[in-house]
Amino acid sequence: MAEKKIIAVIGATGAQGGSVVRAILSDPNGGYTPRAITRNVNSDKAKKLSDKGVELVTADASDLESLKKAFSGAYGAFCVTNYWEYFSPEKEKEHAKNMALAAKAVGIKHAIWSTLEDTRNWVPLNDNRMPTLMGKYKVPHFDGKAEADKYFKDAGVPTTFLIASFYWENLIYFGSGPKKGSDGKLALIYPMGDKKLAGIAAEDIGKCAYGIFKAGNKYIGKTVGIAGGHLTAKEMAEKLTKAIGKEIVYQEVSPDTYRGFGFPGADDVGNMFQFYRDFEKDGLEIRNLEVTRSLNPELKNFDEWLAENKDRIPLE
Ligand SMILES: NC(=O)c1ccc[n+]([C@@H]2O[C@H](COP(=O)([O-])OP(=O)(O)OC[C@H]3O[C@@H](n4cnc5c(N)ncnc54)[C@H](OP(=O)(O)O)[C@@H]3O)[C@@H](O)[C@H]2O)c1
Image (cartoon, rainbow, N blue to C red; front, top):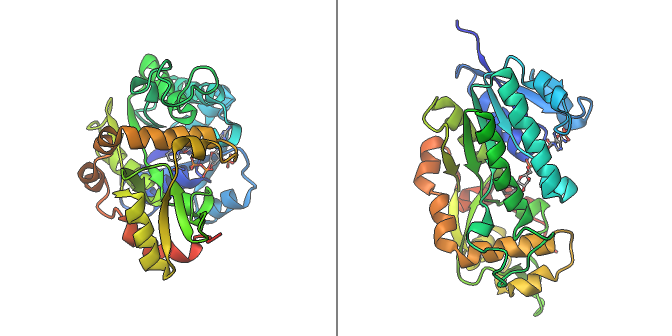
């Protein structure tokens, strides 16, 4: 039997990378094997991977040499940065640049870079509908990733640029779940108006990425957006109500109100929602449901995701 192609996975202990590892493991005859990259091979999450027989390699995205070693001998690399650990597009760009340089240095045949749109192509810095943040960004956690696309392109790494959607897990872990609204009712409090938000089960990101690797050269040089559903916040609230059995309403707030909520990154996330709201058509077109399903026939919609996760959503 031919030797399996190694996919080196950054963020293997996290949501995106972890889902890539699990997608590869779920297809033992697919011809690929994951290599999990982590800063700490002794963490509980890393140990869970090694218990499943996954190769663990230590590397830090801020250390180019460590990434070269971690990518060495691999066919593919899944590259993701964790903006929410440092809240800095500059650091995110540095990390992505190191991933691109390491991929080039060791001859990676196919990298997937988990990027997002450059929202400044829709809302230039002088457009005051939303505040400019950190001096030169509109949505810092999007714009920095988009800027980093150039590192993969300039280095000549065969790359697919993967654009994910709002994880529905944000309802569980990211503070985006139902909260008591001003009238005391449980509410999804988003500045989305009546516009649709592209969302996805985080586990499907890895399945789509695996689909992209399996497609060979088809998506190299391409940008691929993915989503499991396009729903208004009102539709999300109605589905939550049905699944949980408690009334949850949609309470619309203005982007300004949302930016003022005061949690770390509220201005960044407020701008993100405003971008999705004001450019609904483009955001949804980029995240095409048919393309996503073709990459991942097991793609879950919001109802299916809710059926599995409804009991994990905190109701504050
Ligand atoms: N939440 C959403 O709706 C959404 C949607 C689209 C895109 N995103 C983007 O997704 C990214 C986060 O991905 P995630 O959700 O998979 O994160 P996560 O679950 O919080 O996991 C973060 C992962 O990054 C790894 N990591 C962090 N810093 C590292 C470094 N310096 N070197 C090597 N590995 C490092 C961690 O590995 P170790 O700790 O094991 O080293 C961990 O596996 C963010 O940039 C965010 O903007 C989020």
